[in-house]
Length: 279
Image 1: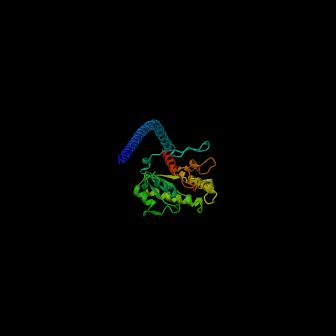
Image 2: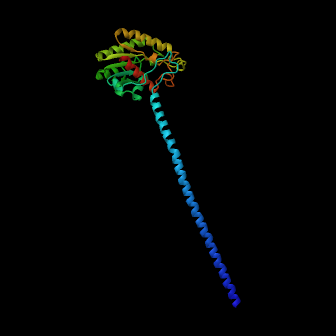
């Protein structure tokens, strides 16, 4: 009986010892974990400081680069002259919108870009797709003809750029005669206005290959129009020469993909050129 009690006491001692050992192991594990966690936090703090120190100069450089790029974009936004400028006129890169605040532009789909791109207010433009010298006199836009609009407005200057839509099916002499009729009607409606005839723009070589509007037709019409209006004291503004490349076609840097209409910034150049010509 005494022997059995002795064995039981020894077993309990062994169990207690095991419990103590397990407790010590657990304690060691906890201490090791806490130590490793503290090292990790310190490493992260060091990494953050290092990253910040490296990132700040990089961010500064990026900001400077962004500012430089923005300024370059603004400077280059208006169209620029081609690299070979020996036979090409440099286009203006700015214009004064206020200068045209009491002027009226009459034209076709090309002229609609003046207000669609917001370079002019819509009140300063009478233009519609397909308009030509034959149809312009009686065509109504928003319920009024260009004569009625001009009469009500009494603009300081009137600019007429029409003829591109008639090149494919109207004779240049016929279009010129219709332009003279339009000019006479506008002059009667607005006796104090300065009437300016703007040449129709060139076409690109690719557009000419389609066979409808060609540079021969453009040049012939502009030449005949100029010869008829200048003797009457009207101002002829030749934007066609300004927009040509060295081969005599619409410079692709200023033309839409269709080779006929203007890129947005081309309107800036045209308005700047008109303003400069009249001044």
